[in-house]
Length: 487
Ligand code: BGP
Image (cartoon, rainbow, N blue to C red; front, side, top):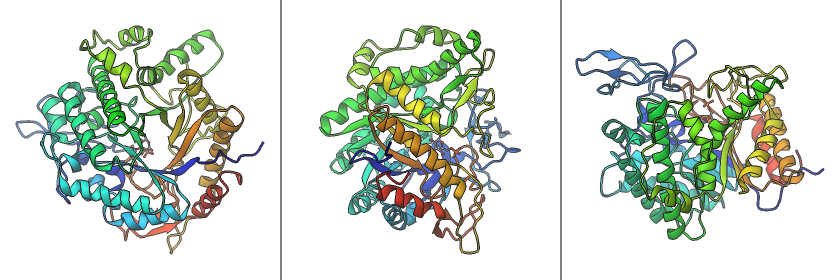
């Protein structure tokens, strides 16, 4: 069976502002919730340093999964001797022309990027947007359009102005819904003439506490209340977006990692069904426009007493359903009865190899996931993140022979092509994470690289920032040129 993809398939790459953009103190940008995150390593997890009113400094724990609530009166602080990766990232802010040209050189016809909320509304509460922030994204979009690249915009990629996080506990507060809708409206007014595809949130099902949502407790009641408020914000935005831009198409991005049962023992199978519902819960509400029946059991299991909902929410969710289902896929996971909930990687899979970070490599899992989503929601899908984090060894010219990345991508793209050509899953496109090396979300380091293009920068931000295409750059260019036939 040919691997060639249907005409018009969107090929591209994806990035996120705080991992890529930098320009922290430029163009009137405000402080975002991610700006307080330090770099990290296995011995020293990425974290926010906090200060109590009496001056005591506390380091709560990894911000990636927040085990304990952050004390109510703790304030994040910058320390002189710490490195904060989002402040410079890999400086797309000053390299956007060069980077977009490199992407265009591979034949990309789509580029997914996120807008930094605090670049548009520095505290989230201003009445008027920051003009310099709008201008930066205008320039970026115009540069893409010049090369015939379709923008795919993530309105909110795991962050918010820190002011909203501290003052209102982020998404725990319904008032942040209005702040978000106001922000999205400005984006539609300014960029709607050139941008058709939008994502309301990134990995909404992977709430990680203080970072993305501003919520200080990522468990139980707080977590699910924040999620409900995000569902309403997304639905209101989708409805408004459709009205303002009749051709627009909306998705939200879900982190997908099929949870296989470790054995065919009925208890393990049932556990896997419930574990998968931890993700379906989000896709069902946003893709179908209503809460599924199993939500009662799921919420009870997570000690949620009652979600605060307004009478109009049911109608809002119904009217603001997504047009397509976007997802990230890096790996599958394996689970058995007794494993903790959302413990991706709880059990190991003896049939799969793993990356140095312990992520199982499972291309068929991508085909499985594409089928599962489409079977369930019956709306087009969009793979908006997939890729391989690896330790690249560059030669003295910055060149990397990344055959392992080529193998990973070849296998995943082939599986994607089979889902489209053999299983007939409608798929709008594929944006690889991340075309140019950038800061890793989970570690805050540069060690874990994904790109087709090497960036000369180390874990502490030292380096020339020079961009050099890797071996995979040329390979991917050929795959895109042949629209997948060369896979
Ligand atoms: C997803 C995020 C991205 C990204 C990617 C890879 O969860 O949406 O922002 O970074 O994962 O993760 P990491 O950088 O931790 O390897």
